[in-house]
Image (cartoon, rainbow, N blue to C red; front, side, top):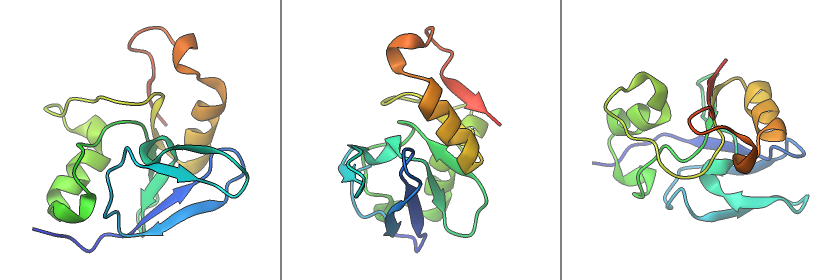
Length: 122
């Protein structure tokens, strides 16, 4: 049931690559950038290598992505297009360009967002 998808995680503070490779860990696991910024993996803007779309937020189940089929990973990655998928976890949620995800990260703290307004698409 595994897949061969590679991911790239980027620090929203300094734009360094924080992780590059197969996600064989829970997306709630902690990542830390060399600049000192740390958070759960899904809070970092990330992309599937070869796809020009980034996303961030708690829209994954807790299985390592390497244990899912490619179709299951794509459904979770493109969560906004999957009406049956229930989003949970960290805020803010964003999907779009890297720049869009970083802009959402920089201006949106969970306590500052009205309920339900943290999902953005650009």
